[in-house]
Length: 165
Image (cartoon, rainbow, N blue to C red; front, side, top):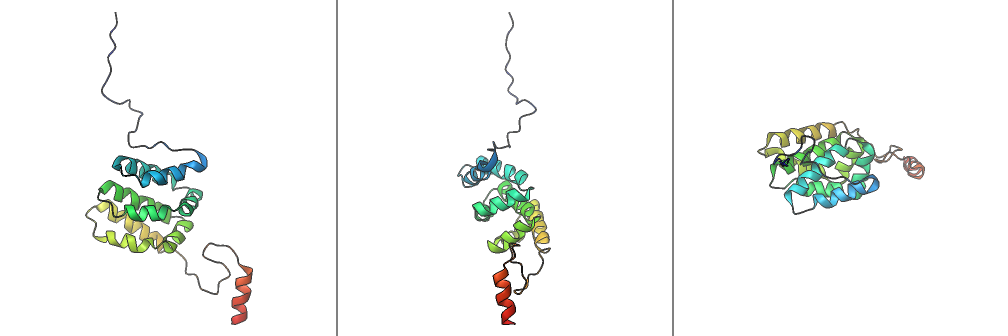
């Protein structure tokens, strides 16, 4: 008769640091709730999944509209090194997109990131530096330009400003 042996090791294709992600429009709201969780492992898994999703500009736009920047701003002050590293990585990835750079200015993320200049973790400081480097690529917008920061042409504003000059 054969005896079953159960291994104590996980199969090689299971990643314990990977969070379960919902599909479609439910993915980002679920991750935002997990970012605000009290459980450290849940926050870490959500940040790892968020870093994967933020490479798509559509997800960046949706994340900013949901309120992710406020959640990430709180996580910058977390006591866990991995949480701070992944938070700065997510912000760095968001800063690579123009929508993310505009969100940084609107939600005042620059001031919150500046507190990490003296962070003891090298990766955290490196991600913060990369985010600042991408923010420096934001073009200057003059008050008289026909485009708002969101990139939408506002004809009435343009006519009013031109009439004042």
